Image 1 (cartoon, helix red, strand yellow):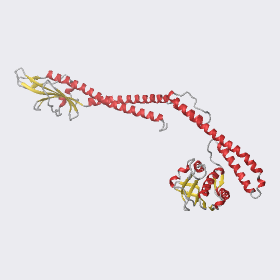
Image 2 (cartoon, helix red, strand yellow; image 1 turned 60 degrees about the vertical axis):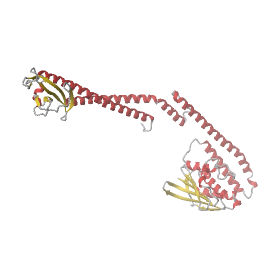
Image 3 (spheres, one colour; image 1 turned 180 degrees about the horizontal axis):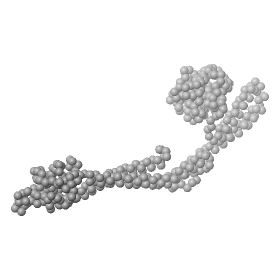
Image 4 (tube, one colour; image 1 turned 180 degrees about the vertical axis):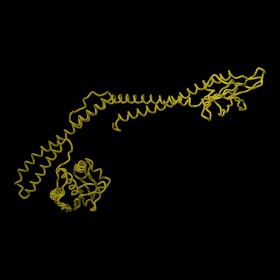
Length: 446
């Protein structure tokens, strides 16, 4: 179960809540049980004091006498855990049970005659004190403290036994509740799993819409997703139809141009090259429009040769500007890329450089670039000596429909196409200021 899933979060939350609840319940129940055991012990010791009072006798001389043996046999056994003491108000010990031989009597508390006090002594024993004023037959009065103590083991053993039993039962109950919560959660989240399975089926092409029976709360979501799918398919279909219509429209003039080649004796080869290039563009756009997803190219293309072809074409297009192309290219530079993609990227960038330059365009290729995060096989640099693009507008012109200068003729999609293609190919496009004075574009390709 993944830590980011709703099931994991809900189950963890429920387990934490149950753990906190059972933990607090255990503390409260244990404390309540301890108080109950202490109260029972207090009542037990109260009975022993009453037995001592019934057995005691105050003589006319003022001395208190106690019988040799009390009804409770533990008072006669040293170290039995049950001890009895009788003290005067001045803390003078009058009598102790045989079980308390060698033990120090607990100091009596300050209580009123006829009152009792149940305390835990420093020795770790529970003690019940009873203050009484005794009057003999002759009218002599004496004040005594009757004290009975019990070792704390009586309470601790019962509390520990209760704790052990309680924690075992709470643990079992917690496990059962977590399992019940897991079952309820799985049942509650089943509609989400169903809609996820249907979405995966749509991605795999097994379904076209979300057509399952979903929970009432998810019907609106399923409807919106279906509407989104229909909208995207409609857009894709329109794009494919538009490109197909464009390609079909270009086929006719291309055929006418082929028939007119013989009338362009001087430029026969140039016209022929351009017709071949236009035909390649049409085929490339058709394949691109019909593609259902991006695929990694398994073919290589020579970047240097492509740059030289584009340069030769631009020399003819911008013959009136007499542009000086400064090429710094290796003899060959092979990268994995479709030739049509490379023509789109380099052609748009070089065309823009020619459009904006004053008289110089510089194209360079560097290989095996491995600097920091820019770890790419090839770096293509295209620079011009024109006015340049303001730094604040470099990112803006990469959006569709935005042009660096609204007064210059164009559609504003060339740079957007370059940016999208470079990203799809796993590269990076960066713009900046050239040392020539104009704009420098860097294309990192892997």
